[in-house]
Length: 235
Ligand SMILES: Nc1ncnc2c1ncn2[C@@H]1O[C@H](COP(=O)(O)OP(=O)(O)OP(=O)(O)O)[C@@H](O)[C@H]1O
Ligand SMILES: [Mg+2]
Image (tube, rainbow, N blue to C red; front, side):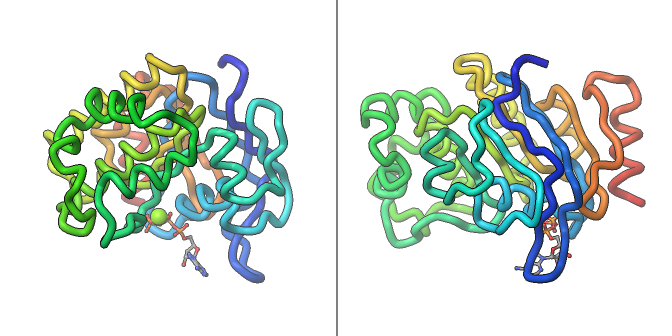
């Protein structure tokens, strides 16, 4: 692997007294797409929220290109270049598509650059800039969340189960977009998933999460990938 853009070391985190993520180590290289696969309730979203600084870390550390971000606030982590596409709805439903995108930009890119990103990745949104985000379909709202994350010039993208409830044709398009953006900018991507075809199509490497711990990993091109992931999520 090239120099990691994101490194998680010995991380434990959770809610109140409850530990969910246990002593977890994970590195994402520049331009690397890593999938984390695990059943419901295993801690996938908790890990992403902990990396983003939304949850306190009980122990361990998180760094970005060797810059410690363990104690940073979510907006500082975002400013350093970590973009996050959460699992739950995270758009301002009563604001327009354009307003939702502008709020995420925080001066990190010009509107022209942002429009170019949208035109390249999600051109349908250009016709919808003045539409209220809440009137987009569920799948379209996820596209808007992706567009918003790709517009900020991120170095690392964290994506939480984006394929949930999406049509296969939209998923294939998403695979192309994520890989193209990775190739263009060397973006590192950590995506948490339960969808095996999407995981296989998009990622370079996968790790299996079991009760907050990594219980297996592999190169996605290995011939036994489908079998290993299927066994893990249907246990
Ligand atoms: N706000 C919270 N307060 C307390 N416990 C929580 C909270 N959110 C999640 N948990 C617990 O933490 C554990 C991990 O939840 P998490 O949402 O990270 O799982 P997940 O792997 O993302 O699952 P899913 O695939 O269903 O999204 C679960 O036992 C869950 O009940
Ligand atoms: Mg989740």
